[in-house]
Image (cartoon, rainbow, N blue to C red):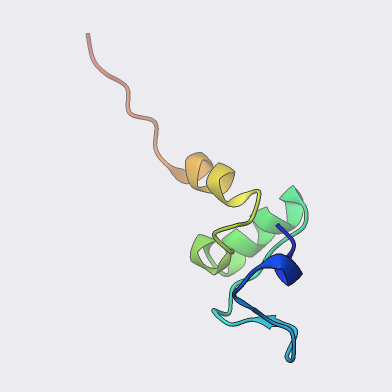
Length: 63
């Protein structure tokens, strides 16, 4: 999602009202999540769910 289309975007300051960032590519999203944390990435960002899934441990069931 483009920030300008979001209802949380302040067009006067050209910033997110929630202080979130919206990386436009995977490499930047990874860097931002490593430095600032996943919570700083916008909920509407295309890469956020993939980052959350990548950091979640895989639970294996024992047989």
